[in-house]
Image 1 (cartoon, rainbow, N blue to C red):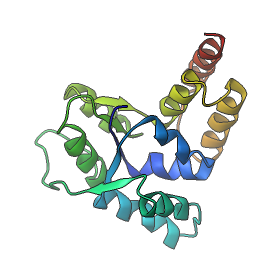
Image 2 (spheres, rainbow, N blue to C red; image 1 turned 90 degrees about the vertical axis):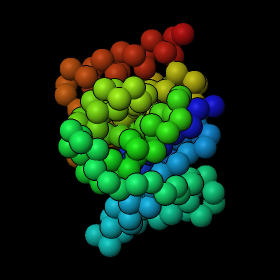
Image 3 (cartoon, helix red, strand yellow; image 1 turned 45 degrees about the vertical axis):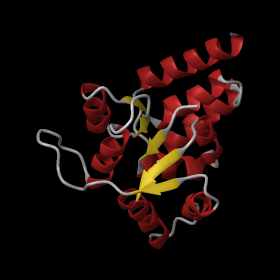
Image 4 (tube, rainbow, N blue to C red; image 1 turned 120 degrees about the horizontal axis):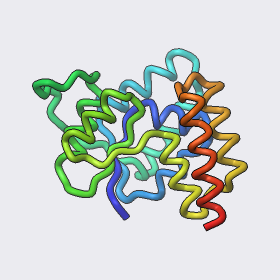
Length: 167
């Protein structure tokens, strides 16, 4: 199983969907203190699902790692995404799980494998851990929670999920 380094928004969205277990596709699952601090801010804003992320950390299913917070020249991403990309770049085969388009592009430019939340859920479908109907419901809930996904990509993801189920 490859290592994953997860940013705040995927952790928050997965917690809201009650799908943090899909991170079990990776071992270990890592994040940084900067990311965890961003996630914990949601609790102060009245988002109790953040407690699920805290439980994953306390249970040892998500590990916190230290990483330099110094900027990378030419990389315009926030502190959490920067920390995730720095940590993911340390070992070949590590997957960065981020949702921000700039961070996704930066990861690809720097040779880092990357997945966003919908594609992580699609991986779970491909491995038989989620049915296509549940995938569609998860995508719909993501959109209801404010996730930005173009209609074209939404249809493509549903098609890929159907094909993955059919094998």
